Amino acid sequence: MLSSSAIAAKTRSTAQPVNKQLDAPALFTPATPASVQNTTDFYSYGSSYDQVHIHNAEFLHNYNFRGQGMQMAIIDDGFANFLTLPTFDSARNNNQILGTWDFVTNNSSVNEDDSHGMKCFSTIAANMPGTFVGTAPAASY
Image 1: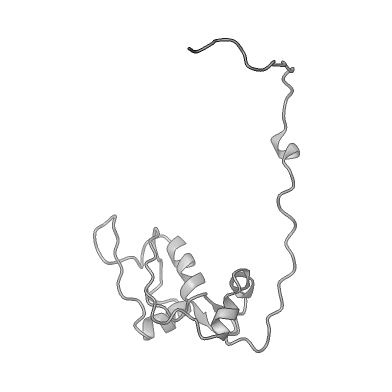
Image 2 (image 1 turned 120 degrees about the vertical axis):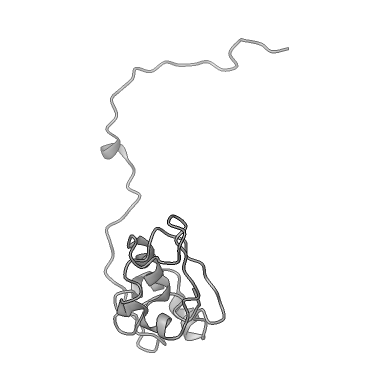
């Protein structure tokens, strides 16, 4: 049988205005200076070192785990100019781009669409030593 009586005493408090921005706990600390890359790493990462280092990918790269033999599908809203950007020269020249498809227009062209996918793709596939290197530059996409 269900009872409608309370199981604990309730106390009422007066509502006070809340300033969420000022009351929020400090979850984030100011950015730390960029890490210094080890000069013996296989790749010279350039400006992508901090992003690669977050996951210790340089450790894997140094042990020859660079994405070779792997196929990755990247589904996003566009890969603007990926056919001409030097960031993807290695992927294009080595035939690592296996195919593309635009699910909105139902065709294979994604080069003229939004740039968000291209930016995400660059963090994985870029191979511009000393400038920007991704986390799996030897994979196929």
